[in-house]
Image 1 (cartoon, rainbow, N blue to C red):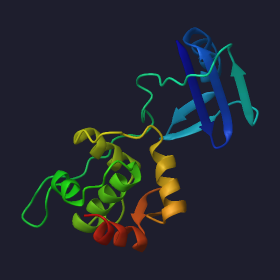
Image 2 (image 1 turned 180 degrees about the vertical axis):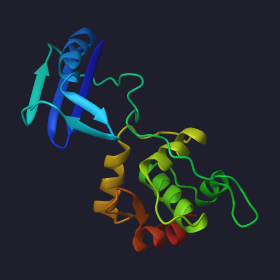
Image 3 (image 1 turned 30 degrees about the vertical axis):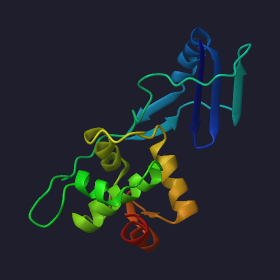
Image 4 (image 1 turned 60 degrees about the vertical axis):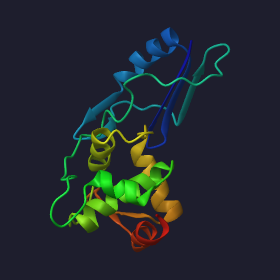
Length: 179
């Protein structure tokens, strides 16, 4: 069984690929170099820009169970129907986002900021929505998908405090482009 792990701590990439035993051994060695705290990842030792260790025949990529969004703390928000607004589940069904994860995130962000009236939303809100509503294809690299949607599609704005808000382009996309 082939296993692959890619850790990108702000481009201090560590990529391990090979048998599960091989990857586990070297991941344990490098685990001490990585410290998780304050919802941020910090390097406590220097890892070269790109470290790539390969085992023979490492071609098939396999995700390890439990690797999804461990460092994102869930941030609850009101996703239920009330007298002024539909539930998030109803809103998602009405917008029919298809399979693109960035579209789901845009709808969730729009719902939180425009329908529920919050100033901003965070990755924890998005992860909470995916988990609570059992939305398919919950992203492994949620922050990166949001950054890509910000840079490529101008759907979001990243605020100075690390929270997200909908850009005007993102609002128009959800209001007019989605069913």
